[in-house]
Amino acid sequence: MKQLSKSIRYAYWNTIKDINPLFVEAQYAVRGQVPSMAATIQEEINAGKKYPFDSITELNIGNPQTFGQKPITFNRSVLSSMLDPNILKYQSGDVQRRVNFYNDKIGFQVGAYSQSPGYPIIREAVANFIQRRDATKNRPSINDIILTDGASSGITLMFNLLLKDKNDGVMIPIPQYPLYSAVIAQCGAQQIPYYLVEEKNWSAEQKQLEEQYSKAKRNGINPRILVCINPGNPTGQVFDKQSIVEMIKFAAEKKITIFADEVYQENIYDPKKKFISFRKVANELNLDVEIYSFHSISKGITGECGLRGGYMEITSKVDSEVHFQIHKSKTIMLCSNTVGQLMTGLMLTPPTVEEGCSESTVQQYNEECKALFNSLQRRADIVTKYLNQTKGVSCQPIEGAMYAFPRIFLSDKYVEHAKKLGYQPDVLYCLDLLKETGLVVVPGSGFLQYPGTYHFRMTILILPEEKLLAKMKIFQQWHESYIAKFQ
Image 1 (cartoon, rainbow, N blue to C red):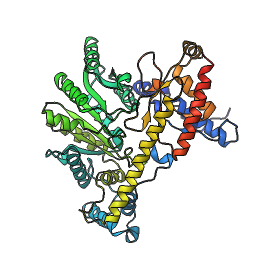
Image 2 (spheres, rainbow, N blue to C red; image 1 turned 90 degrees about the horizontal axis):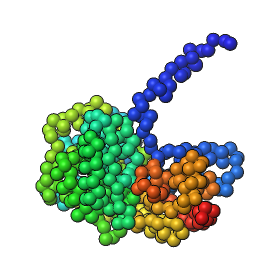
Image 3 (tube, helix red, strand yellow; image 1 turned 120 degrees about the vertical axis):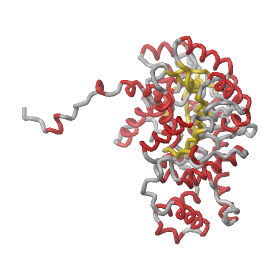
Image 4 (spheres, rainbow, N blue to C red; image 1 turned 135 degrees about the vertical axis):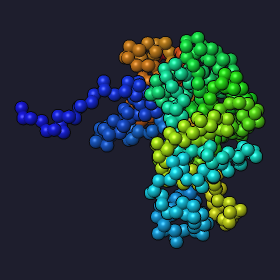
């Protein structure tokens, strides 16, 4: 055999045994086994293989623009002109005014590094937004604001800073967004689950927090962080003020840091509910508790997932030395991408008459946002309705966010069938749903769930709404026929 080339000989210098085992252990179900099979099926369809459907329908991830959601015109016009000043002369006077405002502070240098925490002018916009949103005189300093590549990078940064060893634990809501369990695993720390109560629309119960905290302490785990996702992902609940008060008091008493994941704060569809930030309630209570809050341009009405923008706020209760270490760590990582920074500023600073914009520009912006929100609200109702009309399925009202997390009632016969095939029951269910209908959903086990229950997560984002209706009818017919085989 001829001697192999140098590049081929060293192709497998590192194998799986050489990789950090903590990273091997980490799992991310949103892009896990079912989506991977979906990608394979789509490739086979493209190559001519026949399935009962023409293409897959990706309901596994909250990615609005893949379903046809349009970007906000004003935001994209400003952003495009910052990237290419040559087109600025073709823009409206209102767009030119905003671009010139940014240019005075930033310059047309979007391809250059900003300060590591982000452009000061955008951090000012974040601070002003938080003050308006919370209707408070307590405006954060821009030194408390760090611009991030989406919320995920800020959360990951803080986990890596605060989790020291295998005895540290993070209290996460179950069901949870898989980012949390994955990064906890990568940090070598411990998950401390606290179960949301499905029958009470996924409420967080004080008793459950106390029980899981005590259990962790008995097992030698030191609870360090309490994760609160509001509105909920994957569950779609919106916490009322009393629930937030109880979680903050619990954290203050136990001296636990709160991570407030608030990326869906614009996505609240129940008119009886409203978004209340953990920061606002903590300030009203005047309790000594550390809170890090996270927001993103990926969700809400903006829906600019691929631009990767967001921010993290460090509350004033955080120790000054910890504050320094956060900024030092961000400096090591350099700045978040500048396009995402600009879109973060645009998301939080809509055009107004007060800044000199015309009424027509303000009206167009507001109408675009209202139309998007109203459509999301209708789609949440459509999904809730069809799931609850399906035999053997139960779904709590989708109060907010972009997902349904229905419970599927699987018979003992089906559970045994799945186990014999080597699958978790909800995983087999989702794989068969994919292969027979092309619908891609995520098994509930990927988000963790109460033992003995089975769920899946799906987005509500399909457009147009008529297509969503059609897909829900396909699901309904498939589910009832499929489950009947195992009664």
